[in-house]
Length: 162
Image (cartoon, rainbow, N blue to C red):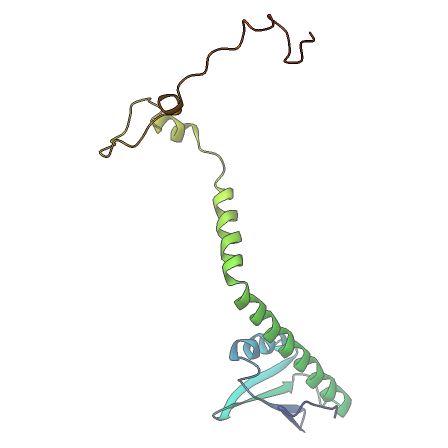
């Protein structure tokens, strides 16, 4: 068998390998994800023999595999388990960003308003209720500016050249 980390124990028997992992290192969601990737190649059984351990049995669907094939299966499952655990951690750390991007994408997918929406919209210039009297238009607050013209003649730029 190949070298395995101390937190994973492996035993091989009759075309199957049994791995025992610590769920505090590999979350249950990551174990499910890795197991799902392998269901086309082997039968996957999960069992909790005691608190703080999950036993994973990978039983090949093919005829009796050799020792090298079982070792490769353990290595591939270990790599997939690590990949799923890392993906889960990245997803948790970036959950708010993922939600923001998704909501913006869905909002953008709605497209511009339809003609019916625009027809129903109130474009009137009527004022709205302002019980505190704090709403003012730009013109009311700052006044209208005098039109430019009389200085320097018509068609002249500020520098004085036509």
